Length: 147
Image 1 (tube, rainbow, N blue to C red):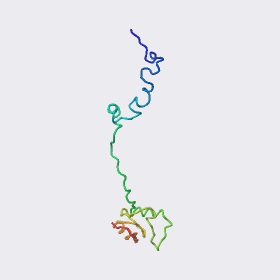
Image 2 (tube, one colour):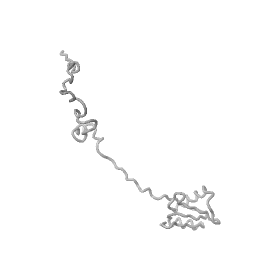
Image 3 (cartoon, one colour):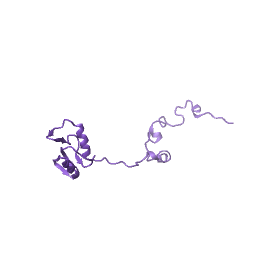
Image 4 (spheres, rainbow, N blue to C red):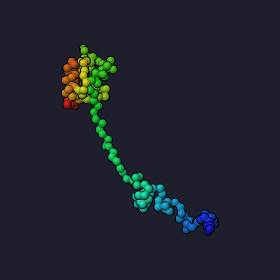
């Protein structure tokens, strides 16, 4: 059986080991660029074979929303009043400024029994009706809208 020396043994003392002028087997030019250079150009066959799922865009990115208005239901307002003991009162009515508490709109879900004066940017017709039936009233800010 024929046995041959490996190139590393055979080329002892030759300085460049068969790679031509000194420097031809160095740096990125020998490899067609460093790292992933040329993946979509001269190394495309490699990309197709081994890494096609790493190239290009896929999927859907939902655009960032405006955030919407922060709303509270009439029933939630009733619960909120239980937590706010030191609200200013006008006779029997409790005064609540919902914009100071971070709410922009009052909606008509749930029920309310306490008379309340609510100051808010916007409110629904049903919410206004429920608050007034309980003996309270809704005060809208200047640009407030009733829907």
